[in-house]
Image 1 (tube, rainbow, N blue to C red):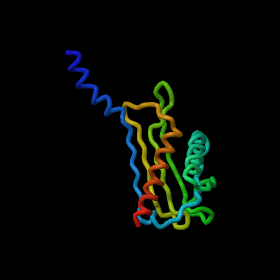
Image 2: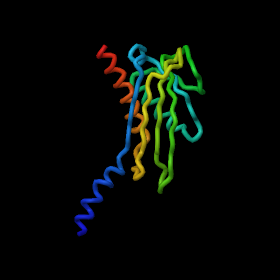
Image 3: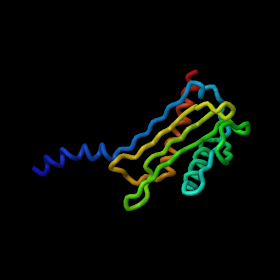
Image 4: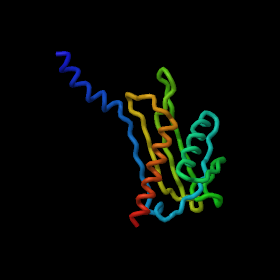
Length: 148
């Protein structure tokens, strides 16, 4: 009987522990050359995330400037904004991360990346989460460009 319960509950537990990640991009993302980024710093409690995003963008080969929130910029190709949500359960863990990439000169959204921890969460490394979302965003843009 215990084996039946175990085999019945095991798939539910595994599904509950899954995270989700989704990236979308606009067709204009294919046409925008991306060599530099302006990262909107949040500071305060998110200063570690600011650093993770800056390093992650640099790992994508971008020159990165940081500063306060802006709508447009003539000093970069893209503007990167994010929101992060954290929870406490024995230790702090990242619950959600949303990254928006906009064309710097127009402010038009080029791509979004969303990551979410499950209800039966794990304790993922925030830097790895950031790198995974950024990698997927820029990989999709590069693949779409190569298909044109």
